[in-house]
Length: 278
Image 1 (cartoon, rainbow, N blue to C red):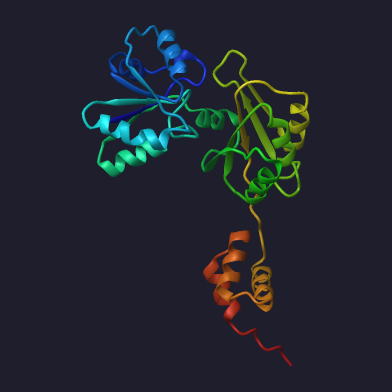
Image 2: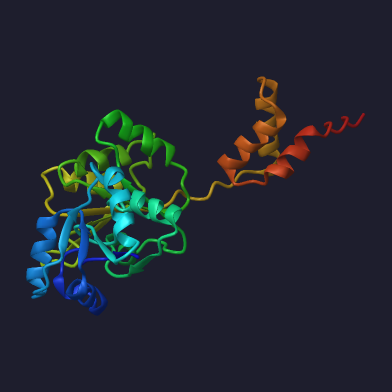
C-alpha cells in the first residue's frame, strides 16, 4: 500500500508513535527531499536505513508509476519535508495513480501547519478554505486576491517571508480584502521563536515591511455578509437583463454576489411588475 505520513512542522516532539514505528519498519520511503528524511531519521534516533526515492514537484508524474508498481508488493511510505504529503506538497499525482491502479492508500495523521494556524488565529473555524501559496507575480497575485474578495469563509495561505509584506499590502488593497479586514500572521509554528501576530491587513502590512523571517502562514477573516434588500436584488437582476443578459444568468450572478436565492430572484424577475394604481 501507499502510506502518507505527516511529519513534524517544526518541533520533533510532535512526531507520532505511529510515524516512528513506520520509519523503523519501512523498506521504501518516497521523500520530498531525501536529505531532510535522513535528518529526520537521525533526529528521531532511528537506525533503520530504508531505500530512499526522491518524490518532488519536478519528477512526481514520472515517478508515480514506479512507486505504484512497488506498492503492489510492499508498503511505500511517503513523506514531505513537513506536514502531510499532498497538502501543498508532492503526493497528489501518486495517490491519483494508486487509486486508478487499485492500490490501497492510507495515512498516518499528524502535524498540519494549516490546521495549527487556523486553531491559534482566533478567527472563525466553522468553515474555512486553504488557498496554498499566492502567485509570485504581483499582477497574478492581485487577480487571485480580487477573486477571493467576497469569500465568506476564513482563508489560510502559505507565504514566503520574502513576499509576505507585498502580499499583505495587496490584501489590504480596496480591490482585495480592504485595509480593515482582520488578518493573522503565524510564524515558525511549533518552533522556539513561534509568533502569532494579529491585526488588520493594513497594520500587518506595515509590520512586515522591515522584513519577517521563518515559515509563514497567513489566516484571513472571511468577507462580511452582504445584506441586500429583496427589491434591490430584483432591480439588479432586471438591470442586467435590460443590458442584454439572460434572466437565468442575471439571477445567478446577483445570487452569488448577495447570497440571495437564485430561484427567488429568477421567479421575481420574470413576473410582470404590478400595474400602478390609478
